Image (tube, each protein chain N blue to C red):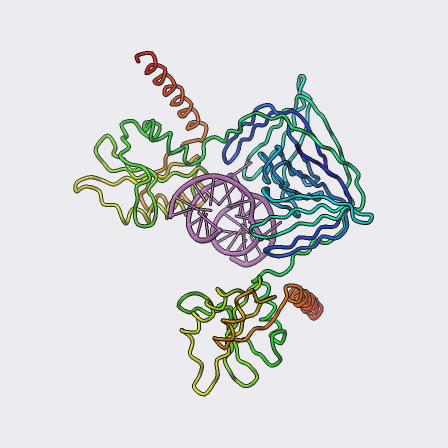
Length: 235
Length: 235
DNA sequence: ATGTTTATGTCGCGT
DNA sequence: ACGCGACGTAAACAT
């Protein structure tokens, strides 16, 4: 259930701080979890609001309709005093769809840590977020032949700056004697000028999409859930 | 102008990261600054959105209405594919009112600077936002007996972290020889564990409400207006 | 255009 | 309940 109201109203807020908004026309939205939004004709953010979880009540007082939303902790209350209603629409929204946010850079890292073979067969991850002087190396590992692998992950097309960043890290990393050091850029794509510098530096590039990582993480979530179940069953 | 649409739709977002939301009924709001909000039947935050400033366009494609909102920088686009519209309402909201947010932490500081006796009679403010190594001391002053007073202001109930922050500042402040240094926490209330640490450190606590500060600032505004009038009259 | 700080930030997670 | 960190944080402000 969701209620959308277009009305002329006055708004008072009092809680962590306080606010007042004089009479004017706004869009008021009240949702079934008790959250309340008051939107003016511009701005992404509501001018006043109340997060869900609290109590919402309405009462007729003199010639105004007063809607009050109170949150217990932290104690704060929102008062909407309505003088005229131009639209009042209630809808029971039928919406069973799952919302899916694709992998961010951190998720790409998690996916590689969980399943290093999405980069290359035989790769083993030794460490991630390894501290080096200028920052953190995303992933540090060893390939099938024992060579050191240093991976820089980008969720956006990797540009010249990504290559330079990786080059910077390499100054502080020494492979074991007799072992090669393989710097690899992992990203969904290579940006315009990056290929040239990449070749010049002798770095490798491995294409990896956000979708692929999301897939791996879904599998991981499933397997973790199964492990948990197994744990309960054997107790 | 504000457009409120209740419709069954599918949403794709692509930009800094990506998301997908399958078919379902939602409330879509499009405002005159080009911002777009997609709300489900719960949650304070929209499930998908686009901040204002970009381009919003709509087109009929086969048997679906596609609304597309693109932001140039960072480049990201929101695609809403609508299969059925249950409500479409447009309003030119007449709303000239000023929004006023009162007494934030900064206003508390202003109130104390303008009228130090709300903290304690005889207090004089020497400096505010005084730079010390780890940050800024909210207020630095001298009490009636010539002791140095260092005030840390919190608009929320002051917790352990506030006490620690004040303690940190003290390391960098030396009172004149023979004078005491009085660290004071000013806040509307003390949070749970703060009292213990406060006593241990030997700090003081002065209760000050946002309402009180708002009152002081109102008086100040009035007196400033009177000063200004007086100035005009004597010109 | 880019970086830094604030927010009635909100939200989720661990203690 | 509190503390801490992440967020498609967004927005304001300074550089």
